Length: 422
Image (cartoon, rainbow, N blue to C red; front, top):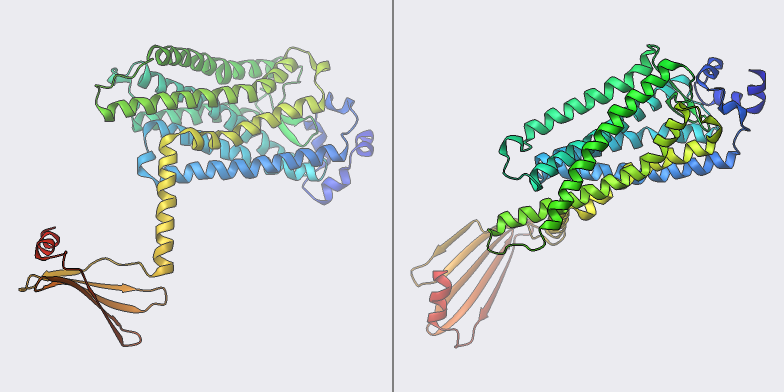
């Protein structure tokens, strides 16, 4: 204990956090064999986590906002995708604990911060891989087995899947918190983050890690691998689109295929990001600790966060429906801005056809200066000439303006009749 206090800035943690001396019980002796990392290493990792957290939370928030804002996006498949976005958002938000600890060079937030970090990490990691498995099943039935209505994903089924996924993730991640004798959340690497105690020599801890690995990794991975191999085979077989099919149905199939590619890309990203961390954990379980260094455990954890950061941007860039709805929102925003800036908030509130075959429109609107104006636009025929007259009355300044435009003789009565009839 004395050696630990001389090597690490314990007083700094106590002054700027909720660290207590009994926290050392949450540190595996393996990490104490190494020299404390240089402060610059902490700051660099903290900076990287900050960038990832900001971009990732922004991207996931955008996906979540788009889903609830646009009814066209509220499909069963997107319900699963939004669940992934929520899981990723929580995972990245809890990185703030790591960032704070990195700034103070260790576990400044003490046992509470460790338990929250470990629990949310285990929960969201499990939810993410299981959600990707559910998405792969949905894509499999849509693309490979489109005629099997009995297994078609509906909103109700998607909600049930999501509920079961969170229950499963919660069941595994809560066990170490309750201290039931099956693993616990302990510091790892630079002592700024916490995870399952994969370095423990206790048989129960090892059994828990292996069961968790099987349920939350191997089984979902097997499902995902099978589904996407079948999807790729189906896509490769469809080398030519049959143009005689109904356009709307064909467009839907194209969208499904593009979504299949999108999820495959996201899956590969997830696997590349999480596999190194899984390998490190298994190395600990199988007593290969001598190959695990503090930095060697921190880099794979950084990859995990990077995957959660990139997922929403991946969906926003490749998903045509998301892009379409995004453009709609941006277009509506620009239109509203024009309305505010140029007094374009208007709509004809009345029109009538006079006896002399002239037509008049009346409009009330407000300008950006809150001036209430009444506008009357009349189109009438005088002998063989067509003329347009407009009058505007400003209720605020009580001013009245008139203007008149005469059209050439080429625009005759026949032209007026055409305008009136339309």
